Image (cartoon, rainbow, N blue to C red; front, side, top):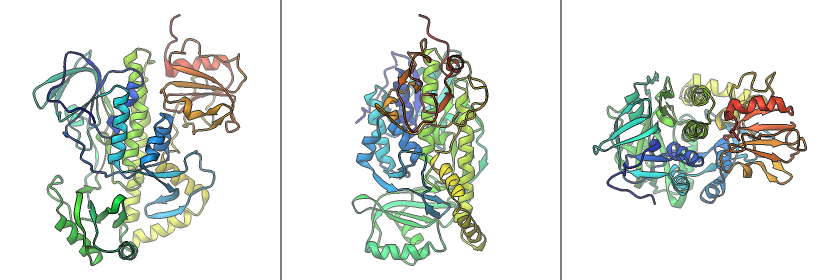
Length: 496
């Protein structure tokens, strides 16, 4: 457990203060600690809530955990579910030859994900303090001063807001958050039921023929998650949901309340869709739900935030440690903002497909027919799982023409001496060299980039340069081209 204290020791200055101790903030703290960045995580809740809106990890997030040596911990607490294509209530068999070594969905409640990521961050040396709320911040040329609700102040070189959709950090920055307000609201809770699982499944199967926003699914240890549309939009979204309210909505939709009782937690969520105009204002950055909110359709929100942190962590560390090339930190917004915009678009589309009525039903039938084509199914799967993401690195940087692999993430592959992801736990760059040695070198960057002389039958390229987040920054076998690419992502070579 992380210590909860009444005060924060302000005798030392932190490199980074992360506001928000959810999956995004904890992942970011761990990524920063891999590079010896002094990081403090502030979480306003005095203890973990146990609430689990997110229920699992998609393929790319599973790969992220594998790249950092965490996957065994997650597999021990999670459940592998066979992978299949799903989009807006349409299910299809998984495409053959999916480009990953992890072709499954990992069912794991968000509370467990947070617990595992917190343990990882603490093991690496992150400081996590609960019960501290940010109220204001000021930026200067040298850093950020944050004031907390208890009147204490602390300084850091950078601050990152990972504090959710109602982000205090984003509001203090004055960053615009355009998009659409909530049109629909949904009740959510984990409860015990008073009917047999067979009775519940039979009712759910019938109701979902016309109402795809209703769901009831078994959890661990006899708990069930209930999801049902609310009667309308509540005037106060923070108002607690009552068990009677959930029972009544279940009766309205299904004719029964399933005898629900003993709720573990109850909540509500809306379908507001918004995207921050900027992810960075000088020394303050935004990540996760602080930067984007959208309906939970497709289970992409938690995954999107974790992947934000994975993209940002090494870049911010490079800036702090003094080797970042000019503009590296700005590539965080340039790369992740379009990804979030894409997720917002696909959740908008899915919400339309999930709506009742003949129009959405006709659209579902049409898209279902189209998804029978492998190319369409594979495209939709790539969008939901994030394995289809390709960052735009443009031309140059050692590449006269854009290579087919440039900008893609590298999936795990078998090497003659092991496997690729086992070599990426430290969060460093990596040159995977299949040329036989002698021609290519990372001399001058060996403090940031590992040179691995190995080969794989799964890689059709002489050599690839991987960023710490696993995306391919260079492909080829020309030493001069490599020497042109290395400074683009890893800065100037070390003197001596």
